[in-house]
Amino acid sequence: MALGATAEPPVGANADVLIRRAQESERRNDPGAASLYLQACNEALRSGRLDVLTAAALQLINHHRFGTAAGQLPALLNAAYRSATESAERSRLAAAMARLWVYSGEAARAAEFAAEALHLAEEAHNPVAVADALEVGLLVHWGPDEVVDRTSLSARLAELTAYSDDVELRLRALCWMLTSSLERLDGIGVQRQLRELELLAAQTGSRRVSFYALSRRAMYMLLRGKTADAAAICEEVTRAGRDTGDVDATAVEHTLRGEIARQTGNTVQLAAEADLHEEFARAEGIPSVLAQAAVLWLESGDTQHAGMLARQIAGTDFSTIPRDVDWLLTACLVTDVATRTGDTTTTSLMAPLLEPFSGQGVVNAGSVSFHGTVDSYLCGAALLLGNDHQAYDHLAKARAGYARLGASWWEGRLPPAPTEASDNAPAGPTTTRAETVIDFYPSDHRIWRVGPTRAPHFLPHARGFEYLRQLVRNPGKEISCLDLSASYSQSAGAHATADGDVLDEAARMAYKQRLAGLATEIEEAEAWNDTARASAAREERQFLVDYLTQAYGLMGRPRQFNSAAERARVAVRKALTAAMDSIAAADPVTAALFRSGVRTGRFCRYDPDPARRIHWRTEP
Image (cartoon, rainbow, N blue to C red; front, side, top):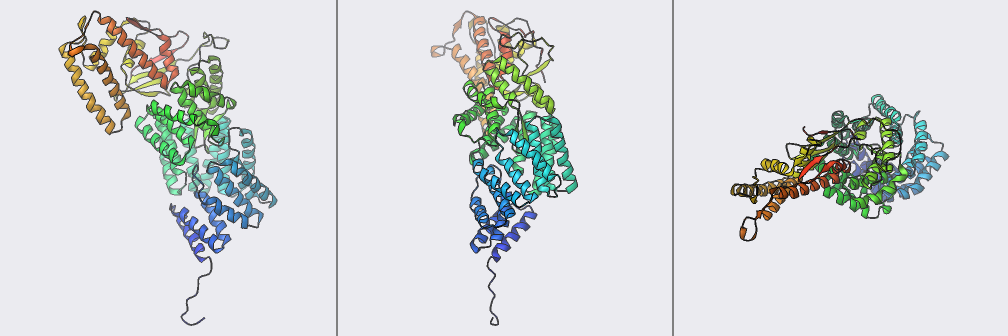
């Protein structure tokens, strides 16, 4: 070579540099590592450096977020797979291809690669490759119909990895055993796997393992209703996720925060999480996340939007949704929203789809969150559809499952059992029922807390709620509609009159001032996106407008009525009916308690069901 000449870099040197930069970036938890690995793959493919292509492609799969599209990765992995010659290497690439398709929501494409991965690994007598292939096989068999297959594969994977020093494979095996235990409602198994995860984190010092151990412990705390403990752990989960740069850390964090807001009744946080879930679901086209958004909207008090989302998912022809990891979760959540919003059409469509999975737990992905038992959703559906016998059977199964898990929060959400006196209830000995505490009172922000104490719903104010509260506070006592109406009118600052003009001058001015104030309140609430406050203000405004319309005839002349009592009877009946309809949309069981016990007329009365021990809590 002549003096001063510049040596040409070896072919593929740029790919080597890129993969080193990607590895350094990965060690710093830099989100740009994935982009560097992708560049390394493309450069290695262009320059024929298939060894670098394989290494970069296998690393890149670890940065692929669950539930997102596959992009360019299949082509890169396939190129590496075709060029590989060793069985163990081909097995790893086939397993990576299978994992990619599952993560992208196309498990059917993954099956062939998963089977090839296991065949090649066993052919190579490579225990690590066999374990990797088994784990991928679990991903492929993650559908609702394959619980038995998953149980068997999980046990085999756990046995194989028990003697392995591969921390990542051991972590995956423990997560699968945890998921299997939750699906089978095996409380002892759940506790054992959680302890194993925590032990693995302590012994290895791995921040990634710690992230999994902490997030699954938070899930378990929520399952048991220990919300404060879960919230404290969630902060640690957030820090661990950021430290490790785990690709699914943000999704795990928001899933936990949504469940915490659900248990604490934080409607503002629920709406924020619902909005985030819906935005992501629509961007990525993921039905299960959209169904989770619907549940969060429902818990936030926006029953109309929640019901619309549930109908949208079910109305797309549910049979076209892949029967994969998310199918059962999606079906249960759509059923839940449909049931609690009183949508009998969607409930009738979804309930038969869930029947084959009675006795099974519902789990989100790799046990990120627990969503109850299938029987609890079937119980709610049966109650809405008037099938008390089925409701009784599913309720008994749900209670037994929650008892095995120690899932106190979920057990607290179950409705009271149908009474033995019901014509549709199964025959059997009468048992003494525990007292059920039902919350029914407003907060400082005019949001009503309605339903069982451990699982309430939060609904915007309606005047009929005040009437219902007066009645349940005085069981068996007749209260005149005039007294009920007067109590509400006084709290609203209006004045009722006897026979003659519907409104006196002072009342008319009070109503006009209140209408002006409500217009400002609605505008302000909408500007701050406070849907509950805006809804309550609009409901009150409509009441005032309707009342004023009745009070004045042509040319603004005051109307004359002969009976204030008759006016009160009509107004109170309408308000009570609207209130019970609103409650039924969120909680059909509590609404049924009102509908079976409330009597209307010029005098109203609440007669509690003697077969049910209900305690109404009407104050905070």
